Length: 284
Image 1 (cartoon, helix red, strand yellow):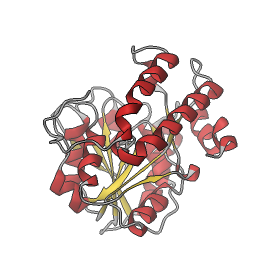
Image 2 (cartoon, rainbow, N blue to C red):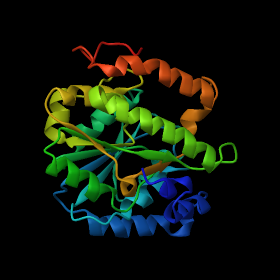
Image 3 (spheres, rainbow, N blue to C red):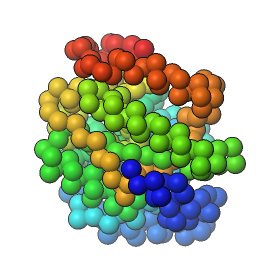
Image 4 (cartoon, rainbow, N blue to C red):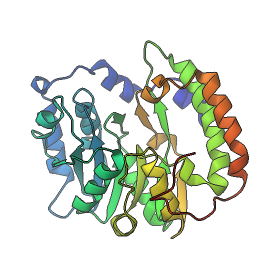
């Protein structure tokens, strides 16, 4: 882990934070559409699927970061509106992306609709509040193809907020990434997150996402993909995604409470999980 590279937010991330209140009037739509005209074609190689629920504030920055990719792979962006009641639909519909509406609530149903609409041979899963480095598409697909993997997943870091300073987030992430290395030995699916994850369209369609309204649909997909082949942890900091620390605002304790809970789970990670049906199993 390159400590210096994540102790502070990269300059490119700070640029988005400085423009967090961008609006359609600021020329962002024009830039996105021009960029997508350059990056996509009638037969995209990659489909980026983004489930969206009330992300009218952040979705422009997310799509803007994706439209600034430097890659040889033509790609499309599929935004799946999951019953948003803010300006999400209005904003997405003026962008050069595919808009879908999924009225069954949950990330699983939204991601499932996305892969069903995908035209690319490869699918990348993204989140609507993520900021993606310019090499993300190229790097993730390169690993997926080179390693002949059934699934790849990458790292992410949190954007500093008034509540959480970057140095606090850094040490929390450092601890989490040490745990991730342990989990990756026998249970990599516990690390896989929809914010930065890739697989082939064929495999994902045959398996299908869990369409229940339940957390962990991304890890469940990864677990099922593990049964078909190799899962690869993409450790490159250059491909690290940045996101707001929303998950840390949940009412389930302090940093120390979260760390304690993670440590208590470690024993089970020392051996592989038993086979089970991810479409009916419950979260522990």
